[in-house]
Length: 355
Ligand SMILES: O=C(O)CCC(=O)C(=O)O
Ligand SMILES: [Fe+2]
Image 1: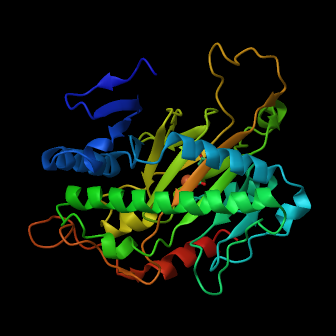
Image 2: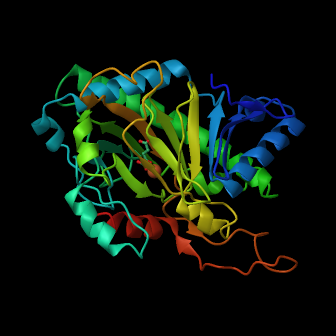
């Protein structure tokens, strides 16, 4: 792996990215899932520290088998290869449901409020991506838009995604347990907040694109700068690269793919919940940087496709999210910065702003 991985004193953490004051560690989650209580505590503190500083980390030995992740990537690629009219027949219809297929140019990501001109410019160069959004599968009136009526491959897609959804839900619960310990709360504090699994599995396909598109439109990106909305996001990337995280200096730093890890980042609702102790950091996806020795001089006119899988975790939609105890008040210099809000109201508000 990368030469620049610096070993820390604790064997379960290494530094993957360190640039412009942005530090993103790789953390061995096995030591949390299977370690002694003191291992567990050490991992919980490292995870929480990463969320307090960069808002991003890579998790390895996270419990979701590599073979499962590969299967999901394969099923996703086969789904996006379907005829456009099939995909369109499964289209996303409303923020309340947030389920279905979203074609290129459909989603508007939120921008810094002072950047109105940029927003206008963005309409001329939409994100170069298509997505498939999958929600909890048992919510009355909000059915998933499965392709299972098309063929056996569609039936298989449904099975693969349902099973993966459940595994990611468990990983969300475990990461929230780590955050609870790291914030000096009881380990199971968040369990009742996340047990419904009101999460959103987003398959992403960034189609192959002529290099000229980026040369001719200097502001063009594959996915515009944004922060995520919920508690945490689990992001599985393929080997292409292109994900960048905004550093404290305002630059964008490559979050290079690391095999067999999942990128985990905090979302806006977790930042609000923690009275901004935890950071929800802006990120984007650009054309992939050249991989030295692999495709620096490949002579091709196009960048290859990129696939990623984002699992957006949320508190249960009906939960009232008030600022966490221990983050404000007596003996703490910080005041309570936010009023409470129901998770569902918050998320629907945020999704509505992207229409
Ligand atoms: O595709 C990626 O690597 C990132 C996607 C992302 O940030 C998002 O969909 O919120
Ligand atoms: Fe994101």
